[in-house]
Length: 534
Image 1 (cartoon, rainbow, N blue to C red):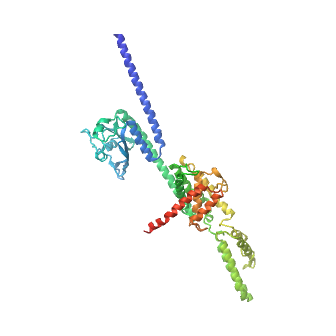
Image 2: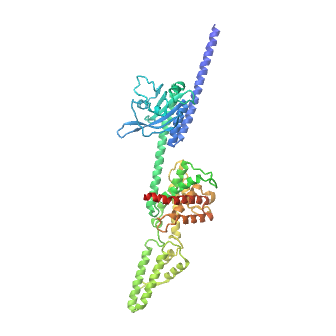
Image 3: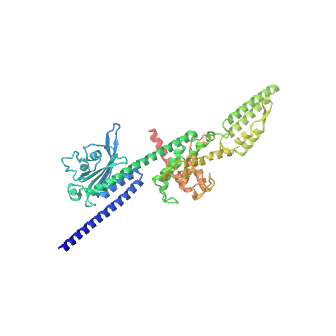
């Protein structure tokens, strides 16, 4: 008898040990699963994707047909509301996002009660609430979508300061994952009550979700701060260089369009190129900030519209007026009125040659030689000393073959790319924006190595930089706000870009993407103007 008793006792102990071991294994599995979920939540910064992930994991952990999130918000007077952010059901197609609905945090609703009491609410049958329950079930949703809510689990989400952030809802724990809960009969057959296990799991998930949502909000605020900084920087560039105001924004918009067009290429070297949302944002920021280094360039160089430095033409013009008066005075003294008319006509011709040479156009060799001849002419100053019509410094500027900048000035303006790098390198960019400096710094590099400042070539120039370069050149050629050159028609600008591509300086595939984009824009322009007039 004693032996039988001992055998039974041992068997009971073994069963208890096995049960305890199984329970420990189950708890360890739950811990590892929740840890995995928590890591996934913390890595997701996109708000919509995060909310979908939270609801999906809540449904999965509890074998629920439906799940949802409601977040807390408050009016100026302190009144608190729950706003449904996302609902998803296996038995109903699509998601439900209804930001227009608000539910008071009070005893009138199940979710309001959970938020008010800060405790989980477990409902066995939403259509059979106990008489003691102060809240009621709103059946309008079920009636509209031919659904049947029975068991429910509502858990408040508390943030790190123990404040209610919102509530997490699980609906209809199912015995068959494939069951469709569209009627009372289906609910009777497949839906069961939530157990202590599901309550424990969802409470832990709700804590993780609250932290993840707060982190996502913080990340969104950081992103907004960076966005505000970039916009402020672009405004600073525009104020510093009003002649090109709007250039950076236009370049960024064109780069974004070209990147999207590039993703639709079905042939060619870029047919497999795809950009993530983060990469597109990084490229847009780089395009917006590519000229931020101009804040370090003297303003008179940025807005230099003529070859002569500021005040240069005015000095020469006043000098020619002095020469004219001197000629008239000498003519009166010598009583040689007959030759004065010819002298004055020649003087005005010289003045016009200088005025024309001061424009930012290509200077032909004959004009350069004529300028040299004018510079050799002299006149008598009021103090009796002799002086040239043009100083050596003035002649040097006027004889610039093209543009308005001499070598020293050009190098100073080109230094804006190094200034861009130096400014952007001091900003603590997050990991998904770490290449902004590289993309912006290289926007004047050319594929043949003839660009600046590093003379990079070929594959050493990233695709993102090549896009910015082409957009930058195209906008500079076609912009009507440059004081030192007239705007070119898009067709002529594309001819120049294609010529550079043929010479190996620009990416020919990207130039053609730009050409297609420009042709589409040109085709839409008449219709857009017609709509504007109407």
